[in-house]
Structure formats: structure tokens, C-alpha cells
Image (tube, rainbow, N blue to C red; front, side, top):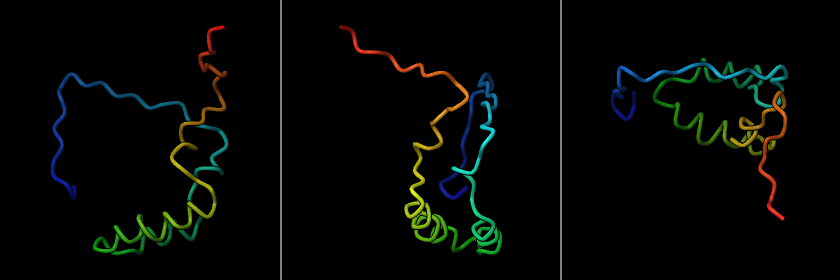
Length: 81
């Protein structure tokens, strides 16, 4: 890891979340996946923070897209009247 090692408590329990059926809004293009594969480790910061970030911005992809859960009913709390 670039920043160092991570230590977790032995009692930590993780499970996978439900996956979305339609991944077109969050999936990398074939070109982006190839670029990731062929980018040397020393250039990964450039890949993520310059190349990929610019492409995601152009396509309107933000981290909030990953939080959208179309498979769940809307559970937003409503304002009290």
C-alpha cells in the first residue's frame, strides 16, 4: 500500500453489498481498463487524478453515482409538518 499497512480488528465483519443490474453508469470503458492495465505503477497517480478524473468529469460520473440504489425503495426521511 502506498500509505502504509492497515490493521483491522479480528472481530471486524464485512459483507458484499447488493450489486446493481445496470452498471453502465459506473463502469469504465474498454479503453480506460486497458490504460489502467498498461499504466506503470509509478504513473498510477497520474492515471487516477488526471486522466480518469477528467474523463469521469466529462461524463458526469461522481462518487454520488455509486450511492444511488435503484434496486431499493426510496427511504429518504420526509420533513415533519
